Image (tube, rainbow, N blue to C red; front, side, top):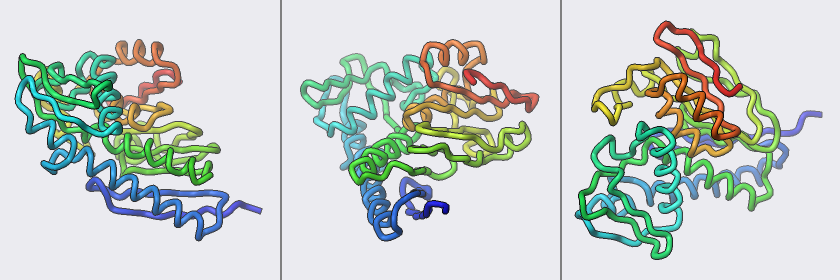
Length: 266
């Protein structure tokens, strides 16, 4: 007998979040998914740059050499962004080249701000959905829900508890023969010219990313996969191989300009 599977959706972060729960009664799964969506909204309220009252909104209002206290979740997300910034050689840059290196994150005082030398403007759109998914997964762990898929729109998905066969969206994946993936306790995030187009800006040049047509990253953390898929759009395959080798559990799929699929870390 097949175990029950329940699906629930919620609009947040300008996309549709979906929670798929297996092995639970419908009423309990619905309550657990509602807790997930509340967590997603809470994280969005902290990271939304368009809200001047959010943590990130407050950081963006600061001048050089100023600080503001923020939540532990905002600190964690910024720390993950800083890691991705350094590991990608600055190609993942939440300020798009305007001054992420000027950011100061201090856990001892729960403060974030800018160095004396200058400041940037933070937009965590390239990592925020993945971070919200990771935090939502923690909520489900508290609920005792272990077999679950959390999907943040068309870009990032996290699968937990069993092996899930998931489809890979986007025309470039279809053309290159990358249409499905098996995930267990892993996240997949994708970026591509057909989805975000010129919105993926190379912070080194200020111009749209053109090295690859599409890129996907697999990692145990949805936030990390989210950030790396953006960086992979601009990284040479040789550098992606080095990054995956140095970070166990990281896998990359890249569609080259000739529409061929490059698999790295598989």
